[in-house]
Image (cartoon, rainbow, N blue to C red; front, side, top):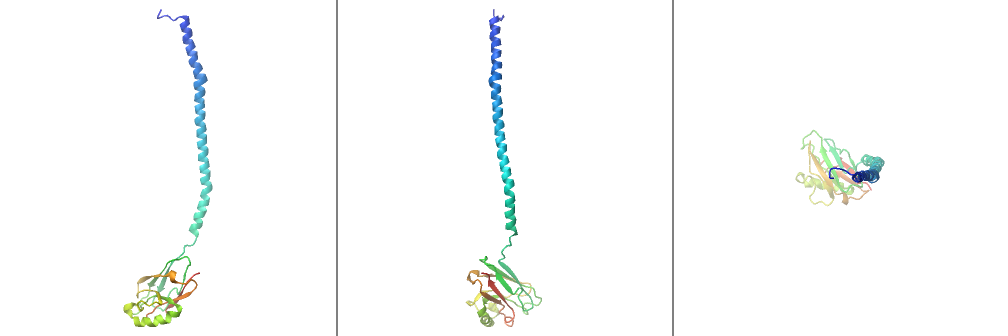
Length: 205
C-alpha cells in the first residue's frame, strides 16, 4: 500500500543514508581537508615569498643609505665664483682656481663700495698674463663708452661692463679656450686702476 513502508523499503532508505554518510566521511571530508591543506600550503608559500622580499629590503636598505650618504657628503664642484670689489684697489679674492671638472665657469662681480660710481667705477677683464699691460693701455683709448675695452680685441678673453656701488655683473668664461695649468690675469682696465687692481686665474689640470 502507498502509505505503508515495507521492510524492503526501510532497508533501501537506510542503505541510502549509510551511503551518504560514507560519501561524506570517506570522500567529501578528505577532499575538504585536502583543499584546506592546499590553501594552507599556498598561504605558507606566499608568506615565505613575503619574508624573502622583506629580508632583501632590510639587507639592501643599509647599502643604499650608505651610498646615498656618501654621494651627499661628497663636496659639490663649484663652477661659479663671487668676486668682491669696493673703494680699495683690490679684487677679493684675487686668485681664482677653476676645477678641471667645470666645462663652464661664471664670475659674479659685486661692488660693495660707498663712493658713487663716477668716483669708484670697476670692471673685470680676463687676458693672458703677457697681454695685461697692453690691454690696459688700449683700454684708455677705448673710453668709457666701450667699458674701457677695445671692441673686437682678440687679446681679451672675457670682460664685463663697468659697474658702481651696489651693482653686480656676471661674466661667463670660455673655459674650453683656456689652457689647464696656464696662469691668466684679470684686471680692471679703467685708467688709474689697472696697475694695482689685478688678480690671477688658473684652470686646474
